[in-house]
Image 1 (tube, rainbow, N blue to C red):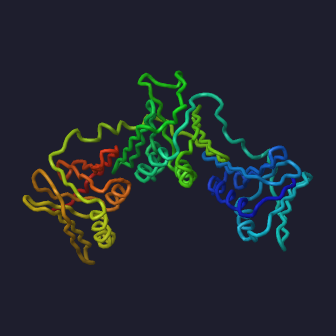
Image 2: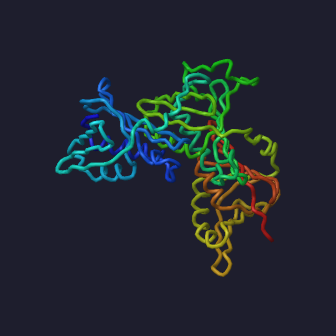
Image 3: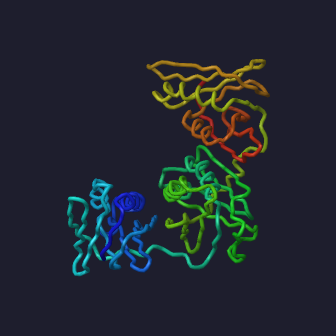
Length: 388
């Protein structure tokens, strides 16, 4: 292998694929990135793969001789990041041993790698379900749900986001058992996208649950793409591949039946509080300074014939605070407590100037809804039971 490439492009590609490199590899080669140079296409491809998440990207390079080798991701990345971005980088691997020479302006480095033959192949889905999703629709669905997934590995299915495709629509849902975020996008699939009839279930839908870690990388990848970009999805045998431009993300699926979250959402509410979303967020962020000192709990109370709500926090042995903000509400007065962080994360995921906080009582689920008719987002949060 012999090539010359841009330091900036090499550094960017390394930072990208290194996120899929195992931090505690079960085999030494999993701590490496795979470099594949192709003389025919004049491209250098980099791959990181920890057996669950795989990321691959490629860019143009002046390839004199094709070849492949794996190099330690951390060491290689640190060296490349400190090289001058004004000078191209030359990579030379003669194939006789695993020694790779790296040359740049005023610098010459040697690194010992491992054979590319030892690197596991990235899963490729050649059959099964395939379709194209609008990048911005997928990005919106992930931003609206990822934060609500669980970080508890014991709750395997809840550590992911459930994606359900029905016709042209996409419904994304995530829950950690304390809150639930559901976002529905009607026009999510590309116009020339179609399902394989054999892959659909009796309800003419396709659904898959994917680990949040994998989807965070997908979100990061497409966040800077053009608004009209399209992502191709391939799903088969417990694997999903996201393909767009020169980048590939592969992920295992989370096996099992995702909870029927629709039954968690109350059919109706006896109390409704309409609030300015930004004013509500600002008040919660101020009161959270005190709530964070104790247990993150804040209390919200309303009074009949009053046009405002009261938000309070009491941090034992530290202090207390209160905020009052304008509101429109219907129903009887109520006192209800929440984890302030859960409320803030849900509010920041809503794309609407005004929101409706709906509830029935201090111990039953409350729901945040956008008042914007174009937004189909539901955020359910369980109240915290506190002594009055």
